[in-house]
Image 1 (cartoon, one colour):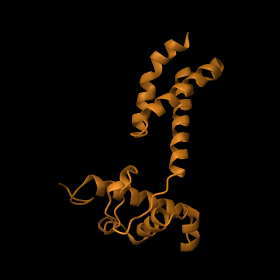
Image 2: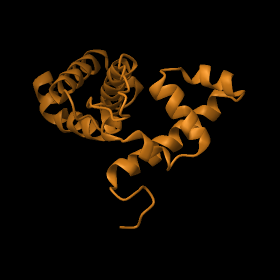
Image 3: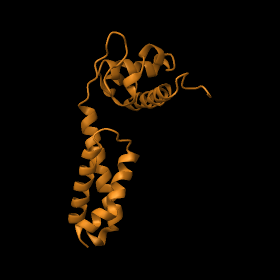
Image 4: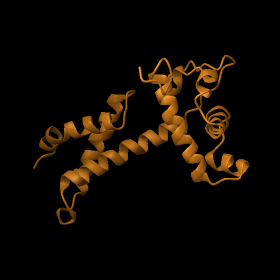
Length: 161
């Protein structure tokens, strides 16, 4: 089977992966990353080790996730005096920090201030607070979930309207 046929067949998979990973910026770049990953899967595929579909899926996903991680590790967002971020950085962009903080627990606030605002690593926060890195990750997951709800709802993250 030719690579052109494979591309026609698997282009929807690349689009699906972009949607699944919530990629909204530089979509064309991620389409190219997906096509390159598909080419590599096409070149490296071994029939004795399973289906091509599974192999291609994993290769495409891995490459896109790898690129996302690379992009997010290089992002630094300064906090203006007014506590409102002006840059377009995911869902954190339009948060009025003082308002958002009221929905967070004290530990979630610690994560937000020290990691997002001060730029400390999860390991540093864990050491300062005398807890495990896993505990800080839980604070992060909970805070992110609440902040996403805060951004998506004008009245508050727990309202039923």
